[in-house]
Length: 423
Image 1 (cartoon, one colour):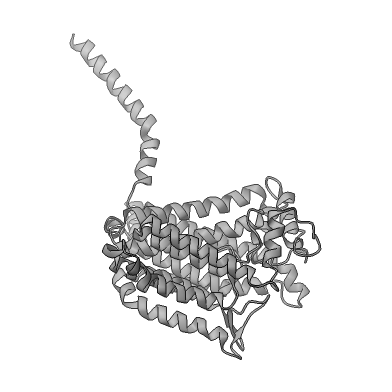
Image 2: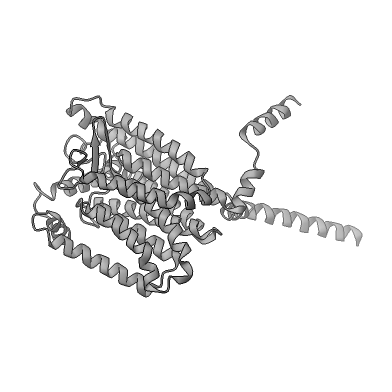
């Protein structure tokens, strides 16, 4: 009897170990996904990978155009790299700022960004292209103030809406100062006729209002009024080509030499990429066929050179970035962090979806870059700074902070490994 019981216990033990071994990887995956550091690693990892892909694609897509303009084939790439380094510094600074610092800086940053935006209307300072007045240009320096205004507005809305949160069921407390301040920011950009950036601002404000808990009926009313205002503004400008862009998008685009030229060549670039692309650097459309190949339509060049696999990789990274921010919005104990992250989520992910939607003909040509990937200094620097703010919220979560504090540093790990090797 004893031997039989022993054999039975042995078999049960082996069965348990086998079951544990089979469920081990799945269990570890679940634990990793629900771990306190997952959101932090998703934010850092997806941001870094998108930035690297962007630098590689800027180099590939801009080299021919740079040569045609009589410059070095690395000119745009080196400029983008400099902006990435500036953005990295701002991002690292932002990751170390606490929620207390945001509350202190929010109002000052908002006024400073609005003042910077108003400089685009100063004769001799403001400049633009395509009918838009949205840049500040000085000898050896140019910047798009609206990009800085996006981050300032997101931080400001986080502070203001949370302070008013118990009263957001009343219209006047939503309007003043939240919607009023956002309206001034949007109007200053709209005055420069930059409709694409205005749409991103509208998404940013909507994200902040939604996460703050503004009632849905009020949310829908504001969205309807904003949409009606955009339509009226477009119809009031008969000399603009925006209605032609929308008409061509809604109908069959036949003006292949005019307004359809860019979108047609973008589609051809994607179509010729196939499953795995022509190969990095092998694009044909970048040979002066596709306008804005390294900027607004860089996703088309990416699809041509890296194929469906490359486009799905970029989409997957943006999906991971979105998941990380949604996890933060859901679990972070600080309401300011949740509202500000909601605004930045709507800005970055919304802008990415609009850019990709334009390239694959799901939206009319608007003229917004692909975050972290397209060439453009102001957009890259401020997007990295905004994601630095989100990473700082991930670090400040009590569970994440405790896990980071308990994690041994790289130097300590190296010393421990060396000590074990010597032993």
